[in-house]
Image (cartoon, rainbow, N blue to C red):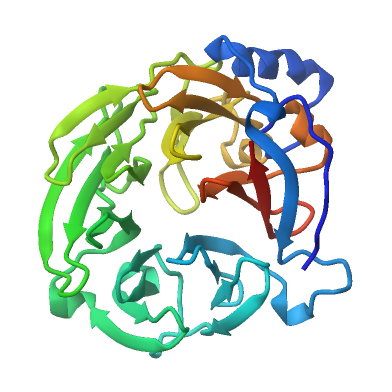
Length: 367
């Protein structure tokens, strides 16, 4: 593994693609939209560790391919599912690869397009084969058992996370709406404990074949649901009771939904959304606002425009009373050549998933 020290920048967070000079003013408006800017001294120290990157010291079979899912265990060991290799890998706190298991396929112990994984008291549960089978792997990397979706009467779902008692939170895709269909299951029996639906389709008309699940997170033993239309975070209890609605903001570029015909059928593209929160430490958490800097031209072919749309992320930092402490933008960190997204914090370090210049996990000290 690589140890690397990087000087602090003025602002932190991440950018998918480099910004041109004519874009910087727009991005500056996006970053300043919360009326406050934090420096890295307020939040982050240096990068202390890079998991899976190469400098000639990492064995080739330890390199990461497609970092599809990342979960953290009881000892804060890191479990990474590599969608390219079809492997689950465990790393210890020093960045050492402890074990790996799995390969592509549909037999027991093999993986085909998992729809998420969740840490349970028994181990890691995968929604395998596009969510049609559920596989349990122990924390030592041993395949334990499978649950057939058909046998248990389970729908096709995405695993989101677990509550404090181990109950599994999942999201079911609902066609024809911009919604979140949340289901909570017992981690031992997979019995359905509760479910509720949050639909924010509004006046937007979606075809019957279209579906877009709203961002769903587990936050402080609540279920947090983001939005594509209202730029807010809704907080629910496990029974579906709406506890609060937080985070109001206006996008720099108005979000639009644009249907495209042909090819694989009708599609919908969303220009921006908010998701999270992700807790940094016991006093702070962040809401992530992902925003397009461009609009689609409805008179041109959709697919020719998809690769040209420029996105930025802004992390809005709050205290436990939901008082905004400030926002961090992307410009300085992008100029340092670091890209990625925040995925986890253990209270002393934050972890970022990056694909540039190669797939890796960055461990960054918190201040």
